[in-house]
Structure formats: C-alpha cells, structure tokens
Amino acid sequence: MTTRTTAPTAQVPAMDRALHAMLTGSLGDKATVAKLAAQFGELYCEFLPDVFKSETGLEIQVRYNGCETGLMNDLIADLGDNMALADGSLRNWSPGFTLACGNGFVITLMENLLGAEPDTIVEPIERPLSKIELDLAVMVFDRIANVLKSGVNARGSFDATLLAPHNADDRPRPDADHVDEYAAAIKLSIQLGPVISEFALIVPQKALLKTTVITPKSRGHSSESQEQWAERIGDQVKRSQITLEARISLQPLTLATIARLAPGDVIPFLDTGEVLVDVSANGKDLYLCEFGRSGANYTVRVKDNPGADGDILRQLIG
Image (tube, rainbow, N blue to C red; front, top):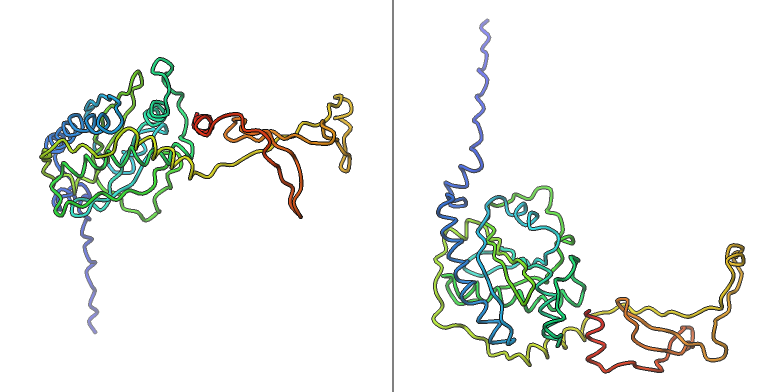
C-alpha cells in the first residue's frame, strides 16, 4: 500500500506596507509631498491674513514652516499638548483630515476682540483651552477650513465639515484595530501682536497626492465685519455652560476646635440674619447673593451685580 504525503504549502510573504501604499497612491515620494505642502503653505500665507484683517481688523502674519510625513495619528501626537484640534472632511477631496491650532493664538485673539489694550497682551501660559475658548475656537477653524476649501480642486464647491474642537490631551485613542494612514503635516506659524503660535493641516497623502492647489479667483473676503465677530463671540460665550460655585463664610474657629470636630458638630454661618454668599465661576467672583430656600431646594438670590454684562464675559474668559 502506497502512502502519499502532501508537500507543505509555501507561505507567501505579505507585501511591505509602505510599498503597498505607494502602489495604491496612498504614499508619495518626499519631493512630491514637499512640493504640494509648500503650495498649501503659500496659499495660507497669502489668504489667511486677508481673511482675519477683513473680518476682525486685526493683522496677523503667517509663515510656512515646512512639512513632516508619517502615520496620521503619530503626526497629530507629535504636535504636542498645547494645541486645539478639529477633525474634518471635505466632500470630493478628503473624507478625513485634522486641523490644529496653538492655544496661544485662540487666547490672544479673544483678548483682542474683547477689547484688551495691545500693550497689555503678553505670551499666554501653556494650558488647555476652557470650554468657552473651545466654543470660540470654532470660528478660527472655520476660517482655516474656508481657505483650504478655496484652494483645492474639489468638485462641487462644498464647504468643509468640522467636528467640535477639542484639546489635544482630550483626544480619544484610536481603536485597537484601527489601520492608520500615511499623512503629511503641513505646518505654519501664525503671529498676532507679540504672540507666535503654530497651526497645521494634517491630511492623508492619498488625498494630498491627488490635489491641485489653485489660486482663488478673489481674495475671498468674508462679509462678516469686526462687529459681527464680536457679536458672535458674545453669543457663543452666553450659550456656554458655566459651573457656578457658592461660598459662604463661617464663624472663625481656633485650630484646636477645628482639630476636635466630629460628625454631627455644627459650625454657624458668620452672618446672622441675612446670610451672604459669594458666587463665582472659573475662579472669578461674579455676584453677591443671599442664601435661602425654595421648597426642598437650597437657593441663592442675587443681591448685587458688580459689573456690566460685558465685564462679566471678560472676567469669565480671562
């Protein structure tokens, strides 16, 4: 009886990922990518200052700082934590790209638009943007996206769709099975007064390599005026949800008494009769209130508004 043996099946080596990306148009050579990135840089340097000048009356300077290539999520992470990010898409161009803007620019822009004297504006400390500042960053990213839309050869003249901005350290991690794309980070500096920040466009090379950067027919000045920007800022601030805190002064106690306090002990309010409460938000005192009760709820009644509406908005944002 003859026994047949089956030869082992040879394992076909998987194609190199980068090679596969190059063959499918998702990865370009450095010279081609650098040339396209420089064209985007020229587009932003020429048109973004015009947009801000015409809409806000503020002069900004934009400079192209070069580009970096790699996997998209790595490029975004390399931008650092002092950035705000907004994911977007543009129909007939790219289903996914990311805009980034330095927090310092957003903070400085708001200070200017809310009436700060130029000589009082200094380099802000590195920190995440507040909820109000993220709401206002929507307007900044809209302008950056509008310049992008005006300069790419996407059919249909569709507007870019942007998700809500978020701080870099709040960006969710990609799913474990996520397959990252090769991308390019087009980096620019943006200067407003003495403050220099960075913004960037991170776009998959699959979209970038198919792009013809065009010069818009007009300067693309928006019909919005400086007053309309200020009005929109005020509207967005007023719609923002703010956490209020109430602070009531208690009678002073000696350290020895405080050390002996036990569950059930009572500390009286400092005020007798009408109990006054300081109400604050974002670390800023806003109102002097009276402590009280309405049904089952403890309440405070506003007694004194220390400033005009605009002053309170500036306090909250600052």
